[in-house]
Image: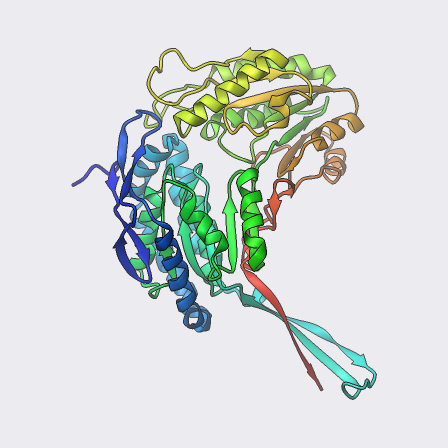
Length: 489
């Protein structure tokens, strides 16, 4: 049997057939070893256009398929993903650099859970009766009671373009609700780690989704994905990734009025008041280092701390960072694994050097000396003001910036002084105050005294952090068009 941590994939799924990629294959690199994990199919622009055309052709029949049949296939997909857990987890760890803990708990199982979540009855989302309205006669129609139904139609063909940090989880969160609502999809994983997503497409094909309902392309370069954003066969783009790429997608899709769901960059502020539980705040902020090496858009990368406890928090964070084991992600004791690529490693280290000039590097700041191979960066804590570069720009690595404040208004002002607005946090023993402050924060999600998420809550960002919301029933709404059906009597 082949090593489950390696895989060669040469084919794309287009219109129900597995076909050779137009541009051959390319290497996928293990971020921890810098060795080749396997080969991935390298799609051409023609492949992308063919996939979009196949999805458009399959849409009428799939959208007309009884909802019970659609949801039953999602249920089968969840079971099939779980059955392949032992095969998929090592592969995900190898191509993403996720630690064994993150790979085994947050990548594959959560993907299956999302297919399960969207296999539930969706009629409460799809149809909503409105109260009848008594109307007077008009030149268009006689008066009387007029009733209405708000009905959600599928959008059409969805291009699902995912990020590299949680390739399976993120893609499942797009594909499952889109398919449940009756859309067809073209799946496009991130170029750095597409192999597990190719395996997901194989699962969906094997459990019986009709030809053309699920299509897959992967590519090393941006051209095939760009083709999807301009294709007249694509009705919606669901994208998770950087704000700069999101801006280009929005501009490219504007001429064809593509619907957009975009979860973009973040620069989360954790506002820590003087009465906060220090240990809880340190643990939550320290998750920036411990959870996938800071490669997560929801991370509390700005620690906005009341001046009276600033030194205590900095000391606590420094101690916390020192206890984190950096190393081989396959080892159970490892907490901080590598970044996704050499390019990302260099980018993060360059940001840290800027932080060293503009602020003070308190902890970390280098490549670990005991790890000459692999794209590692030490957990890093920088102190400074909210004006320094590392407090303004998304780094997407194990870097936290600590910023002091003196009163509630200043703490809120610092948190809101960002072009991003995805996920902030408030830590205070006074939950009434924390709740009041949470409602003043210009972001899509606020955690009060916790870094946990509620997966049924609407998720998305304010400002440059995105457009739209997914999660729970909001994910079903995101992949639908709202139609009003009116009748008299």
